[in-house]
Image (cartoon, rainbow, N blue to C red):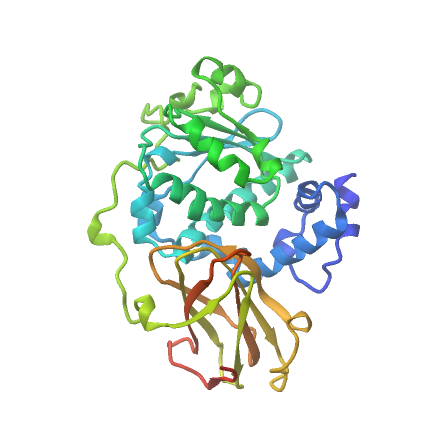
Amino acid sequence: MHSRCISSFFQTQDLQYEKYDTDYNLLRWAQGYNFDMELATIEFRRHLKFRRFYDLDNIIDSKENKSMTQFFPLGLVGKTGKDNHLLVVECAGRIDLQGIMKTFQLSVFLEQRLRFQEMMMKEINRMEAINKKQCSVIYILDLEGLKLDPKLLTVVTGPYKILWTLVYTNYPEWIDTLFVVNAPSFVPYLWKAIAPLLPERTRDKVRIPSKANYIKELEKYCDLKYVPKHWGGYLIDKNGDPMCRDRLIIPTNEIPKSMYWTPSADCPHHTDLECVTMGPGQGVVITYKVYQQDGPIIFTLNRYSERVYYMAIYHSVDENGADAELEKMDDWSPEFLYPWMPSVDLVQSKAPGPGIYKLEFKNPQTWFRSLTVYYRVRFVNELNEEVHYERINE
């Protein structure tokens, strides 16, 4: 199916997405769902609402968390010189994953990743506009320095996997091939545990080449003069650095324990929040009525759980619509699966206005295990002062 006619299959006229409206972006959604256009349209609409909630059209210009950039950097090297590909390097083995988990809230972690995705998509779209050819990424995941830790499997198959799934669900077909390099001897066993948790299309893109075959494999996708020397190419930066630190930040240190997250007035300890407990496969809906205000309304949510959970937020402009079914409301923040993190999260988003808001949590476990989610909802103005609202169900 040609990219120029693909837009006619997506019924999304009611959602504005000017910065994202390119033939190749739409083609990626069709490819990601094997050209099942009904399913692709459903997922594309969900992404457009996700974009709206997290303001992805403007996230590149938002204030960057410098500590997150230092300790969890993601590196866009540039073009590969072959097949209109981009080269990305992630030095995951050097990243203090345990420290990241204990220091940064989910929203900070997610914003860092989404900012990078949008920067990368901007460059992908630029190359596509110039070369009139679909662009994707050759991803080098460098595991040098990765240490065998009893908690590693829990982190990788838990929060890290959920976050990768969240990213890949919202950015289909952006990776052409992912090379895992400098892998310690235990990584094949780790991969056996992770692989069944990944979608088949994602698994098929992963390569774990031997050292002897790595360069030969890489050359199929990259002109080596565009690959930093440290990762098998010929590129060095203006300072003669084989890791090209003029464009890549290489993490080198563990995060100091003094930076670990601690409760605050904005993010209290989870025991100071409200909570709901759900049985296997069950969900809970909490309803709020927000009255007309002068100026913008900011939706503020603290959230915490010890296991993964589904969350969605629905809105209706009808202030008398407290009994409305969710299916008849706007899924302002569409349902996604979110990971557990040790810290209490803080989510803030400009609300669409007054009306009825419904916050839904679901327990993804269908057997035996109940789930408790802790939360606090506030509607505030730009000075962080509470506006007129009320909870209307118990």
